Amino acid sequence: QVQLQESGPGLVKPSQTLSLTCTVSGDSISRGTYYWSWIRQHPGKGLEWIGYIYYRGNSYSNPSLKSRVIISVDTSKNQFSLKLSSVTAADTALYYCARSTRGYVSGWPSNYYDYWGQGSLVTVSS
Amino acid sequence: QSVLTQPPSVSAAPGQKVTISCSGSSSNIGNNYVSWYQQFPGTAPKLLIYDNDKRPSGIPDRFSGSKSGTSATLGITGLQTGDEADYYCATWDSSLSADVFGGGTKLTVL
Image: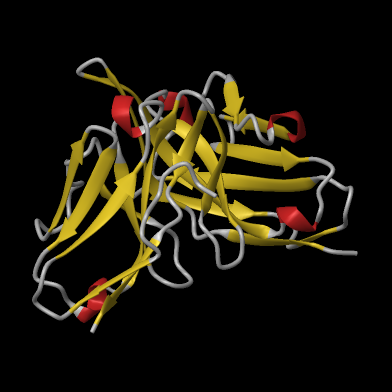
């Protein structure tokens, strides 16, 4: 059974860097079949895609956040991580890591998230 | 404000059928596959439908998905009180170069 688990500080001060790690069990990131993603949900709001990384280390982030986001992978630990810099109160959210399938089906782009972590609440406050 | 528009809420009686719409444009739904997620309060989203109309293993056939042009629809038949949750559509948006989610629809089973 595939499981993902987020970990990291629940409280970050404004202007500092938010750091979260997702530990994957039941699957191997280095298998190269999936992309590994971060998604957040502001309190009482909808979902916002942050970005993803592939086992080789190539990553892609939401252009709306791109300048502040770094996503990295450690295949030896079967983990991937998120760093979000210069945080403000607007970055207070529940942060999910998820496994995603991305590719083409019958010539059309396909992507979806089939396994999710339980979420890690990060509050930005002094 | 999401580029994918969903009704904030829908409701129906137990045993009935409900549909949830997701409206987009040619830069997202019109040229990409759509997925749907179910989220109960305090839990992570769960994949219900992928590639417009495919169900992952374990998802009952009461849940169905379809797409026409720049809109997608999630259908749920034989409604149960346990289906009360928030539902989100999602796809890739080539103009934004980002995965996008709808704003979510809260389903109430009266």
